[in-house]
Image 1: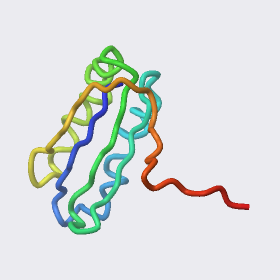
Image 2: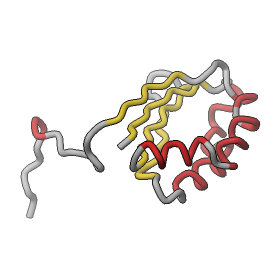
Image 3: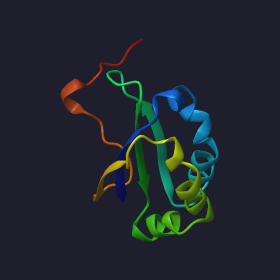
Image 4: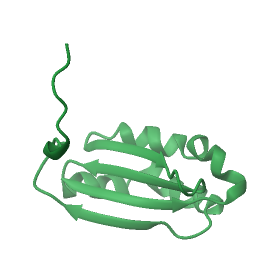
Amino acid sequence: MIFITAKFRVLPEHADEWPQISEDFTRATRAEAGCLWFDWSRSVEDPTEYVLVEAFRDGEAGAAHVGSEHFRAAQRTLPPYLAETPRIVNATIPQDDWSELGEMAVAERD
């Protein structure tokens, strides 16, 4: 799978509304056949920073995402709300879902 993590620093006056601002892009991306997940989180240390964790089935699905109309629309509509260019880590890894963190295994509960 293609595993991507990106950090988006949003202008302070738009930080609280970022989930709504990015909603169309998020919804359309999650509907893509090759999207495994596309999840936003807000930093607990910096309320203007959002972290996007996304994964696509393979390189073909990742290319389809970048070539989609909703991606092109996001390229036009999202940058005016950003304080800086997003930073990204992108890797191809040989799995297709999350693995368990064995070092913090939770015992079965009744």
